[in-house]
Image (tube, rainbow, N blue to C red; front, side):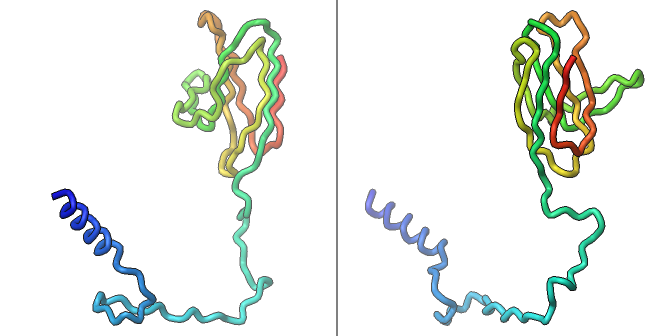
Length: 149
């Protein structure tokens, strides 16, 4: 019984694979051979590149944060946010790029940012939760983010 099951599974796998081949097998699967690709006399100089087009869509950004505190803070950096009626930025939690503790208010790291991003929201929360978090909006593009307090 086990041999029959294995034989059946092997047959099904071979059938599902389509058998391979180079297209000369005369199969009646209805597939047509690919038409040859024609080349033109186009030159690189003839290419038209739209304004604002960038070949490189992402770039590295170094981040250096040094806040004047001896406490451990919790850092979040977001790629998207909205603003409340009072102007307070409200982060989109699905766009979080960095999340983690900051020992004595210090952080050094590197992000990769896509060229479509126009700004980031940096938040540093005090662990006791009684004080307002540090918030700063960073305009992009930039190669380096330096925040000191």
